[in-house]
Length: 268
Image (cartoon, rainbow, N blue to C red; front, side):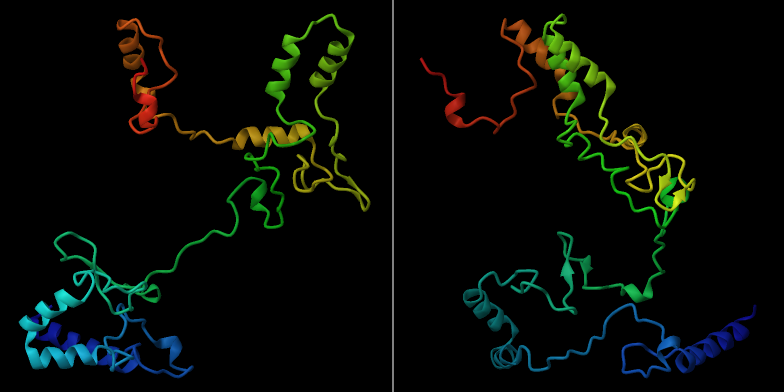
């Protein structure tokens, strides 16, 4: 493409942009709204022209250098990057780097000038691909062991292990424990309106959900990102340090600031 043709194309594009897609920072009609291109930056024209008139008046009379010296003695935190505003004005550029060269402005770039956010409405696969699947209990791993009828199976197992095996009451309690909860066997898809086979696992409706199916689904959704203590990678070094000094090995490592000053002082 020659230079002349390129210049002509740029001029035509600029003219078309001004006529077809006018600037958005002005009053528009409902008919124009569909063809308006959102601006990246808000209008620089202030809606409060009277704001700061007194400071401007004093600065013009005293000069910028004298005014800044006077301002530094009167204003609390004169160099505050937020201008002592709890919520900065939209046109206020806030420095976000130490040198102050990089700034951030409220709603810039404007959300309307960005590409649309892709927000999937349903899962691509699995039971939640059905938009009418609203059962929370199938994934509620946080409250899994808060059921008063069956609060903590592991703890119950440990309790039964400490009791005498030959006691009839212990045998009966062990049998009930091994049988598991019987409060929700599920209706096998049989409702008042008849047999339903839309959900083989029965998790879509609470009446058809069983403990076996629910626990299996909870097992598949249990979190696997549990954090570890900050001494976890150094536990061998912590143990060796105490063993070399003939000291009892503690559980973990005492971190600075975790124990009050009185607890770190020797008492003899």
